[in-house]
Amino acid sequence: MPLNIEDYALIGDSHSGALVGRDGSIDWLCLPRFDSHSIFGALLGGPEHGRWLVAPEDAEASAVREYDGDTFILRTTWTCDSGSVEVLDLMPRGDGRSDVVRLVRGLHGTVTMHEDLRIRFSYASTVPWVRRWDEAGTLVAIGGPDALVRRGPSMQAGERFHTSRFSVSEGQEVDIHLTWYPSHGEVPKQNDVHEAMRLSATYWTDWAARCRHEGVFSREIVRSMLVLRALTHEETGGIVAAATTSLPENFGGSRNWDYRYVWLRDAALSLEVLLSHGYEDEAQAWRNWLLRAVAGDPEEVQILYGLSGERDLDERELDTLPGYRGASPVRVGNAAVSQFQADVLGEVMVALHAARRTGVTESKFSWPLQRALLDFLEENWQKKDQGIWEMRGPARKFTHSRVMVWAAFDRAVRAVTDFGLDGPLDRWTKLRDAVREEVESEGFDRRRNTFVQYYGASEVDASLLVLPQVGFCAPDDPRMLGTVAALEEDLMRDGLLLRYRTEQSDDGLDPGEHPFLACSFWLVEQYANSGRIDDAETLMHKLVGLVNDVGLLSEEYDTQQQRHAGNTPQAFSHLTLVRAADAIAVARGHRTVSGIR
Image (cartoon, rainbow, N blue to C red):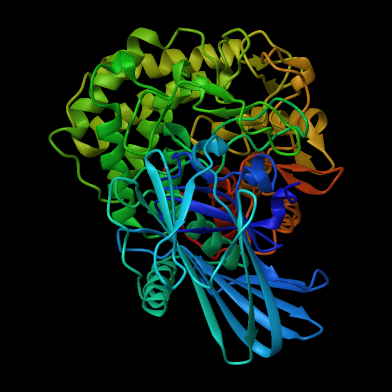
């Protein structure tokens, strides 16, 4: 059975990422990209679905782990009666290979280690053909288009698995390599482990050192920024929403989605966070990814894409993986790709406006493309949509979506007035004002003094916290304060915020989920910006107390069982953590500017 979600740490090379458990088992890994088929899938089943364990043979051994400074090199220190060792796990960066390295170092005494390797290609549908490659015991595993070469201590073959047993004494090192390559290619040569580790450590440390940050949550900001970088594909600039698929939002339920793709909304919000913390080059790479992905007919713009801008992401269910602790189905692809979500173009326009404000120059291509998107929005903004939460029930006129339409036209107006770009200023201004008038008339409950989830509803939605973030109203606007009061009354669970009440919303799924962490970080930001500084800090301390032992957050949090839920690590959770920390820093006078919208 897989561990609790919070018991996994991420290692990565900005092409893909592996989840390493506290028990020393890599239970999830897709190579060569985040969205490739898995080769280790025990996270969504059991060891028989693929895993790679390296741990002391002593079942009573205890483990403490941490990242090696500001890197994604994971150090696990094991202690048992006979001694102690450390295992350094990493995916080396920058050499164009898909490698996983596990380096075992003896600290004192002598520890006998156990390795268990179970390779399962294509989401556990393919058991590879494994053969010994050389006299040193190198193994090569081939299955269809995929191949792996494993180098390290000699292994013994079992029933569809391989094991090794070796001892490490004080001062000794044993390194084990696993390298993916296309099965039609040549077996890659062995690389220099120490050089790969040095280069990786230097990269991550130097990248983190560029982060501009202030305030009492600086450590959490830096780790969250590193997570965003780790989830950014090195070559294309696309930022995936998470490293995993189908980790359940509701344990045992069916709210299991594939997040290994680039959502325009999440990536746009990540771009703003990168810009506000000094990462202009990364922001430029994402802007270029965006322009490539959405190029073409504006009517064909999707809400999510593959890492290189792929559009064919049809959702399907797998029968080869039973799901995390039986939570089925396991899905790859995402049906939301075909949804209309009116807010997405607003997020894109807001992010590109932020890029202009920080000096990212327009190309001959970028502004004409934005104008084409605005033309499409002019013709379609009145359509009902599925909303930010990708409702699978009936389309609605969601208030958050309408506000993001307003934001799109607002940024179009400001592109003309503030930056001298060409466009129909009068028409965009009238559209912006018309959208505002409609939202204030149809999306607001005067009786309760709150904005509502969608036009005509009485329910509220945590996405309403975005209204002041994009400038639709001030954080201390009486209508916004009334909305916050309604959110606190309706959606607060054990001090954290739900997205909406699933039992009161026709979202096309069985009711039930846990507090969505990004929503609570939004509430921190709202508290800080409306003068409730103490409340902001109290909630922020509660939230950062939910990170796991290496500083990672998933999508949701089960307050009853006190465990992470949903896909992990979640870009949305980490980028909203950064925004919340920034808002507190501004409120306390540590930063002069909160955001760049």
